[in-house]
Image 1 (cartoon, rainbow, N blue to C red):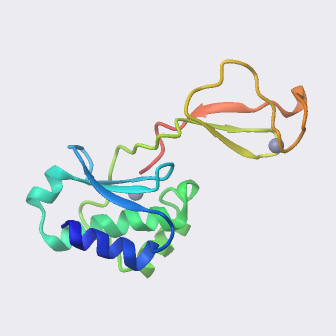
Image 2 (image 1 turned 90 degrees about the vertical axis):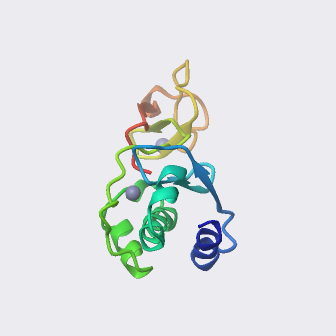
Length: 148
Ligand SMILES: [Zn+2]
Ligand SMILES: [Zn+2]
């Protein structure tokens, strides 16, 4: 399994700094950790699924890596996934997703910012204003519900 996974990463994500590993997830098959550039596969899945199923799970996650975090399961992700051979197996849905960037903020102009913790003070957008500006306050939301 590891060899196949590493082969897929080499084929589609070569030179982009992505790595592969296993995780202990029970409720989802795979995950794409954008902040860490890491694709993981459930050990539980690897132990019971056949190679074609595992390949599909990996392609699903590789497509997330290619499409970017914000694409979620939208058309951009779908196009990438189909281009690399993802057909949509029964393992398509993975309800949980971990992304270590827990908080996503956006300013009124739409610039996106990420933090591992919710900032304790008000933060204004450094792209909009070099000094603190109430007009450019960033509002934060938890990214815990984002897809992996
Ligand atoms: Zn801004
Ligand atoms: Zn997904």
